[in-house]
Image (cartoon, rainbow, N blue to C red):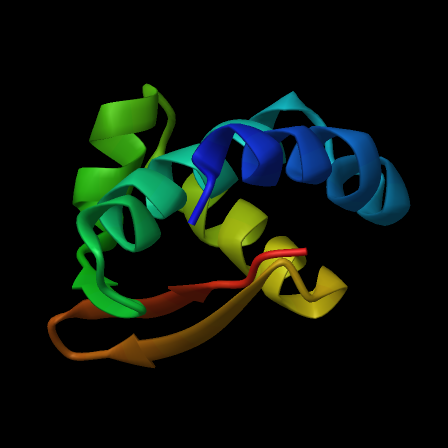
Length: 90
């Protein structure tokens, strides 16, 4: 996979299409780095880990993840171990 072309596609088509704000973009890229860039499709990541890495509260991070799932940027399932996340590509 050519990541430079994929990133251009994300910035040029996906983010404008879904009207993603800066917080949604940062969450998307963090989740992308924890899944697809490591060669895995789905990862279970604790909400606290996401919030800490991005410098926001658990509540804000939860709200942003749910909003992104509603928009169709990610697939999200809450589990006992954390949030099971699949980052969708354009």
